[in-house]
Image 1 (tube, rainbow over the protein chains, first blue to last red):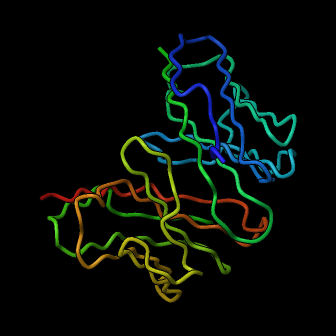
Image 2 (spheres, rainbow over the protein chains, first blue to last red):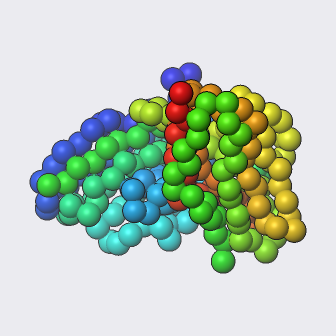
Length: 114
Length: 111
């Protein structure tokens, strides 16, 4: 298994543009998580899904951010419109069902908004 | 409130020196605790979890419920240990699905 796959790995965009980040979880994992990592705030959970259903989106910073999981093998995180303060590394992670356990992280997408 | 505190942003030691990365948590129930590590330009990965009580790469961490701490220790640091270390808490509420991370501590091991 290639692990959690994220694309693109790097994204540079101008303020006001729409940005879409993509994630493919590990096959068979039924929980998916989106995190944002910045120097100032560290790793923050933005939203997570169980069985494709959003469970907790309390970490989504504002309405400009939205996430979807149309099926078990794909999720998107969209920012519209983007702002310079959205510049960060965005990680996707997945884990299988049941009890406490490891989350498997993707390589991250480094977003720069100019 | 559920919180993980890592008081040190940077820990700088020489090779062969002992290392202790501090982690304190705030949670009223019985959490599951983890240490994740991020080497330069690599993805975040699990280092160890408290329920396993195992030693990984020479690192150990003991849960102290009285002090609400889960410090990471290694008796002799190696240069390849240089990385970013995150302590994380998984609360029972929500079925242990979430991970709440501390701010992270950068460990720099010098030759």
